[in-house]
Length: 549
Picture 1 (cartoon, one colour):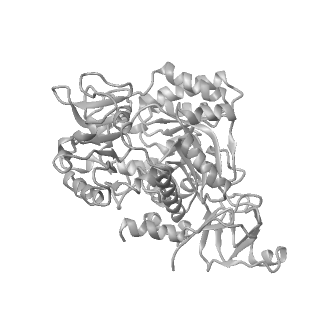
Picture 2: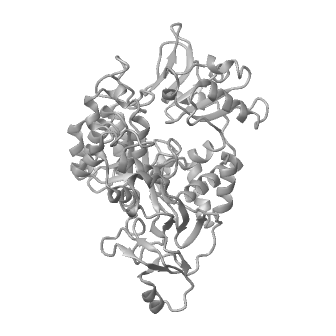
């Protein structure tokens, strides 16, 4: 099925919001993830979407006689999955751009761009996302010249798969908000230049903003369409909640209007986009608590990404001597932002991938918590991909949540040792070690960097494999059990978003957020976890997705 047809089908199957009626489900194998009552066969909920019964069919009939119930046909039912790190509008807007994910060469990128360009007005900016030079012969960064022959007259701007580098043609470079030639560099960014000091076409991390400033912002209708696409795709894959990392004030207001209208099919926990307007709004107005939209948190960045060599390392990259990555802020600058957020009573989620960035963030959060002991805590490091082993126990010591994305390990394992060398792998993608030291592990996907489907992440967490490789898994000592992986996508993700009393497991009094799947993961081979399909997604008792028969 083509992507356009798939997205159309998602919108058809993602049902519109409606008033919730008291409901029930029977003939199901319900894994509640509640240790007090781990398995049930029937469940009921009230008009508020809260669970009022868990047990068997006979008990349901006795407690709620005559209530109409959905027969699950013996299928497995699980708590709704919570993605602890995604980008809602990034996902939706990516679906309206050229999809470059998995392109195996520059020629394939250009072919996809030509196809997408035919759908746009003449001269409009050509944008796309998903290129990854590590999949190409030679693995070298591309240049503007690679795009110029095919697109000499229209601007082209393409985000790398991780969102931490952009590739522009000459027309787009000329439109940048500042002259990009010379020998200067922005803090936390890299403008790749030739020997003459002219930009070659790739801008890394904070340098991306100079071209992004010139790209026309999407209008209200495009943004609404993007949100529809994102919500539908999340519901299709059983995501009932997401921690949205980097929400602008404009996007928050759009989400809030949808929530007030009863038209959010996914619970969104919004993290403000750094030191911007949304951060100020939260400090001035305090946390927001709507029906399916919550906001009490701020997302900051400490460094870039490993694939584009922007992750900040304590020592140089093994495959790029002289380069140790990019710290976005000085220690004092980061500490000032941390103290501001804690002083406003807000939770922090700070992006840190390299071991230098992780150390900087642990230091800042530890110092901030000493100064702001009254703050609510539950501060998080987003990704924690490469951390010095000495710093791992410090996470638990300072009650810092490790918000990690298992599928990143199986995406990066092809080249991670090249970037880091063998010794630094000891602290790489170290999920099991985090748990052993007492850290809370909240799991997600980082969509649209990776696919939305949480079962791909659960499979990666348990097997540390992709397509059955490598045999036994990559660094298998860091693999999680199925129970640990599911907790990371349910109750522990809920706790990381201050929502464990309402969602994350199934228990009387909690919200009826659940999914029906086509196979019981507790009875499936680990290799088959990625193939599990979601048949029904329910949020607060409301069916928001139902698979076509």
